[in-house]
Image (cartoon, rainbow, N blue to C red; front, side, top):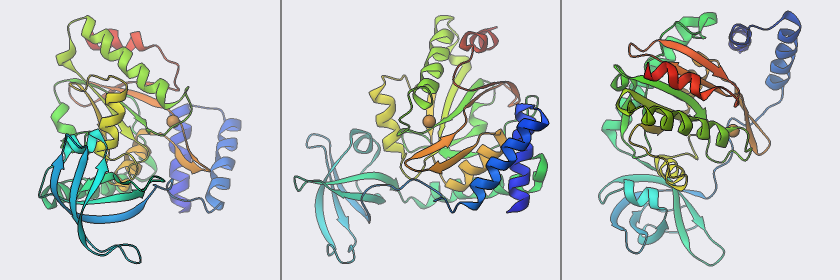
Length: 306
Ligand SMILES: [Cu+2]
């Protein structure tokens, strides 16, 4: 744990390039955070449910699910649940799922935060997460990847529930940041997404959309399932043809955050986090980095379209 925090602080120091005084402050903050037994993640509403989808009914906005017994609550049965548009679009009959069952005040039962339990995708994602973790451990105190280094390889799910391997984006410029959908602070994640959209629009205006991929990875994967990310993008009218929202195993996301020098920590009802946006070139090398939510999106656009 000590070495983990030391590595983390070291990466923060290198990333910010700050004075010793500021570093001392950061170290104190880190140590304090370490002592408080903070929860690892924000709670996700509802109770756990597993089962198999019998039917996706787009018209009724429901999922018919043969669900496993829910201890002290409900026996095994085939039951109809309300579900969000993102989940309804992503899911199909026959899939095994794990989800959160939310009983609403009006007696309506809703399934949300749904993960497909698909052996093939899951093992692919798990293998990539294990590799990324090994790389994180091997890099030790040199875990942080500065401008000039390569983006690490990773595989996560996109907002459609498809496995996305980072290699897929070789040959294009990539802009990547981290956000979470329930971030309530307008100047943080919502602003970060708006900045991404501004870059996307600037590159589109130059007719170079096919040379760019934008990626927002969630800080909050248990809540931000593919369906939630899909709804989030739809609610903002985001063109997802070259802008993906990624989620997956918590360990993979933590390793990515460490390697890219982004801090995140649950505090009360929030995930306190820093913001960074990276620009990656066609060979997978990090060529620029903007910290915070106020940065020159047009500078990124110029670097992408030139
Ligand atoms: Cu945020």
